[in-house]
Image (tube, rainbow, N blue to C red; front, side, top):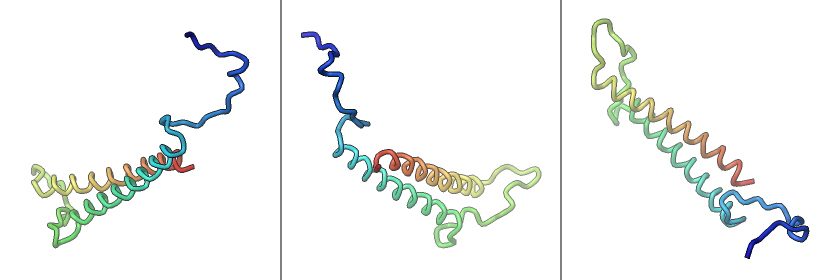
Length: 105
């Protein structure tokens, strides 16, 4: 049985299927995007807290990172990881907000 596009099939209604599941799938993706954006915002907040809160170690307490003739210390590297973690978290939030624009409309 070979299916071909005929005149009777050419008038089908336009579909908006991103993942093939219709409205239920889009609603699920919308919820996942909202939860993921919240999750990554929390991850960014945790990274910022680890970088600046004295109770959590305050890995970024020394503003002078590069001293002439010295190697990076462990504390400086941990601070860099915390800062990059915060930036990464914010970029992930942006990503999931952009996906939510598609899935939640």
